[in-house]
Each structure stands twice: as structure tokens, then as C-alpha cells.
Length: 598
Image 1 (cartoon, rainbow, N blue to C red):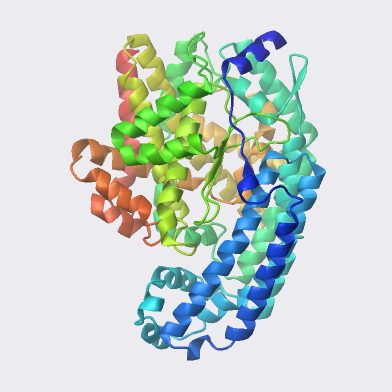
Image 2 (image 1 turned 180 degrees about the horizontal axis):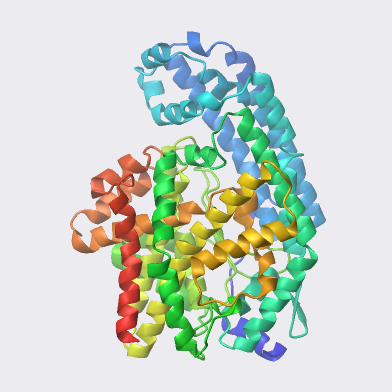
């Protein structure tokens, strides 16, 4: 693609929004930031002096008051660290922003050190005493917070070790995560005479011209290979860091801490993983055989995985068109959800423009309840970008609705965190499908949705399986670039089937996945959420009466309920093997429909 065409495509997108964070502080140099941090630190010190070593002797009313003070200090402190995180996400190549982000992190850690005693000491209160204290309404409102804190009681270290771990975090795993982020943000990928960011180059892996896809893939592979030793060292270090902490905290296997954080039993997650792997032949293997025939290829190369199924199949949408498509989809389901989503556009809560130094991914940052979420994405006008917008708006809507629970109770576990986002994608897909009259266009749209679902379920479980193997092997030995590549290729072959002819250079593609670095084993939550939403959506279609009200209540509940209680009103139970089969069967039915059209 020529540079003039690249420029024209960007112009066709329209005016893309960028954040304005000045509603919180004028800039990263605003003197109010340090003033507020110092004031919060004084409050934290006073809190520690007032309550340390006294919690078990407090009345329920006084302990409830203490939790409320703790909550407010954290909300004010989190607002500042969120402000720093958002600036860093759009300016990773700016050393001044990096310096600011690091300094705020260090001050944040220092202040949290004065609050650390609180949850540790809450876990030391015996059950009988806490039960009596919780009878007071001032404390009983925080019962879900206390429940979730005490789940970690068996894995709690001594106060001194917990403080040491907190203090060291800024020079241990947090430092390595920052190095990864800034390394990836700084990479440039040669393509057609230009040096592209990762977001820009990866978009060409979905280009309708196979030669363009291949050229982009070689560029990605070559650039990642040049940095593979550093990226492998970062990953090895973080895996070992986790192994050391897991042993200290008596976690039985590498996924245990993540499962506990998600408040889900190990067996439920294992059942999910095994169920998805059992469906590999029925879903991904089967679909990619269809795709290879469709593209007229004996076998697919890795750069064909996200290839459009027809020349010029994917129109370029402007930002305004994408906004209208998504809002219309939400409006058809719930005017209230659409109203909340519209605020993100009207109030400039979205940063969509691709630019140097910006995080290449997408997220909705919840900020704190007294503020509002911010969405980051890299919009390039493709159908997948519309789905990303719908996805992140789902997160944003969820975060807005849950904010009424307050800082301590609004955070949703990962197993439920993808509910609103994936549901929003499903609504948008169905809206696009319903408004597409041409049979060939419907076929292409259906195939695109299947691919998205395979990426969300099959690909993420393959990622999780990769992580499981890496973390287990890292317990005994550092893994070389070749070791990591071999594990990666094995999991890709297993999940995608024999329709692919993998080029050896693909072995380095594990190295750009941010979730491996930021949040180990986060990825299974995508599959959990997708299967959950498939089941939810099926319930909505078959029993629509009262569904919207129950769905809104689910989103508004924040972190009050775990998945079992949250899904009960819909008659769903994730501990039942049939739950996963029901969700996976939705994807299988889509493939059935595609084969009928094909």
C-alpha cells in the first residue's frame, strides 16, 4: 500500500478523539499533585496511628467507620495513580511522562505502606468476633469486602514480609512490567518505506492483500526476533518472581492465585480449559479448513489467520459511522445503556487516535467511582475496530453502573469483568447482521464473528495453556528464546489444527502478548466471559421477559456477588459442565450456519 493511500485511509476516518485529562490536574507538572499526595500521606499516617493493633477491640460501628475512612483514602490516592497511568498509556516514549509515572508509583507505594496493616489485621480477627462486629449496619455494608479479604487469609505472610514485598514491588515486577511496556511502545516495524507502531503494523495482518499481510508478518517477526533476548529475559524474570512469591504464600500451582483473585474454584477453571480444548476440532480446526478452501489455499500461513475472506471485504468506517453503529446496537437492547455509552463520546472519555508512544492495545480504565472511566483504543476503521469499540464501551458502561457500590465494592472479578464487554460485542454483531441484506455480505460478517469468537475462546485458552507450561518449567530452569518458541508453536499447532503451515519465524510471536507480562493467566477470563455471554445471550433470546432488568442488576452489583450468585437469577451455573458446552455450542452453530451458506 502506497503512502498516499495510507494517508487517505487515515483522513477517511474523520476526527478521532483524544483524552483531555485536565479535569483532574492541569498537567503532569501541576503542583496540586504533590500537594494532594502529601495531604493523603498525612491522612494515611493518622489512620495508621489511630487504628493499628486495635481492630479486634473495636465495636462494629467503629470498625465500619474505619473501613469507610480507609476506602476514602484509597479513592483519593487511586485517582492520582490513575491519572499517571493514563498519561503513561498515551506517552510511553516520553521520558518526562515515564519519570512522572515512576515518581507517582513510588509515592503511591510509600503511602500504601501506612495502610497495609489494615487488611492484614482484619484477617487476624477471629471469626466469632468479626461475626459480632458485622451485626452493626456500619460494617455489614462492607461484608463482601471482608469476605473477599479473608479468602486470602491462608496465603497471608507476616506483617514485615508483606511490607517488604510491597516496598520491593516498584523495583521488582513493576519495574520489569514498565520495561516491557516502554520497549514495546518504542519498537518500530519497517513497512512500505515507513516505520510503523505495533498497532499500525498489526492492522496489516488483517489486510485484504496477502502480499501485504506477509510483508507485515515478516516485519513483525524480524523486529520481535531482534528484541527476543530482552523480552525473554523480562518474561523469565517475572515468571520466577511469581514462583518465589507463590511458594512463600503456599499456592499449590501457578494459576491458584489468579483463580483465588477471581473467586473461582480451580476445578471450574480446569473444566473450562479442558472443555475448550475438547472443542478444538469442532471449532477452530473445522473453521480454518473452511477458510483455507475459501481463500483457495492448500494450507494457511500464520499471516492468513485474520485475513479477510474476500478482496475489499472489509469497508473502512469513519469514526462517526462506528459510533452510530455501536450506539444503535445498545439502544435496541436498552436505552439506558445507550445513554451511558453516548456520554463517552459526548464528554471525550475516549482516546482513539493511533500515534507514536501510545499503548497498542485497548482498555477501559475504571478510574475511581467519584470520577468516570476512560477508554483507550487504536481506531483504524475496520470492522474489528467497531467490535473493539463495542467491547470497551461494555466495560465502560459496566464500570459506570458498578460505581454506585463505592471504591471497595465496585471492582468486578475477572470472571465477570468480560460480561458486559462481550455482550456489547454480541449486540453490535447482531445489529450489523440484521441490517445486512446481501447474502454474500452476511456470509462474510458471520465468518468475521466466528473468527472473533475463536480468538476470544480458542486463542485465549491456547495462551493460557502456554502460560501454564512456561510457569511450570520456569520453576526449575530459565527458558531460552528457543524453549519459549517451541512451547508456543506446540500450543498453536494444537489449537489451530493441520490447516496451518507455520513458518519457523512465528516462534517469537509469544513475546508481544502483554497479558503474559501484566497479569499472568488473565487470558482465561476472556474465554470464561465469552462462553458466559453466549449462554446469557441464548437465555435472552429464549426468555427475554425481565432479562434486561436482571442484566442491569448484574452490572450494577459490581463486586458484591461472585459468579455463582451473579448467574443464579439466569438459571446458569459455571460449575456445571453443560454450562461450558452450551456456550461453546453457540460458536459451533455459527459454523454450521456458515457451512450451509458456503
